[in-house]
Length: 106
Image 1 (tube, rainbow, N blue to C red):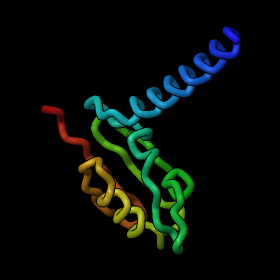
Image 2: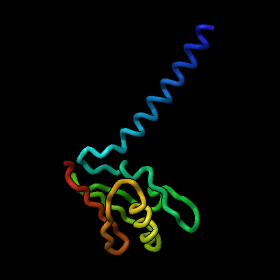
Image 3: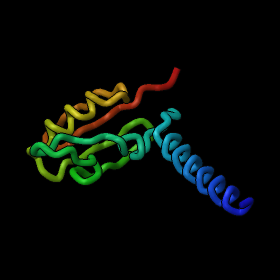
Image 4: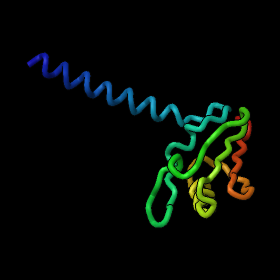
């Protein structure tokens, strides 16, 4: 009986820690990280698709995230998805490349 309660409690705590790690990975700490875009889903031909499956994401410096669409036709859908997200970022489109400049935290 006690072992069952302990096992259930341990399992719940592990799930809670996993959720907390996931939530903390999206916190904006003044530095650009590709994990900020993990939750973005793009409406790609009618299917919500994770951004990571449609584009390469990199951080050339501490304040910039670069998203390079593998399919140039998906660039506008990616831009719309980023604008709809709650990140408050406005992408600058240059062909199939999107630049996201993170403002300094205040």
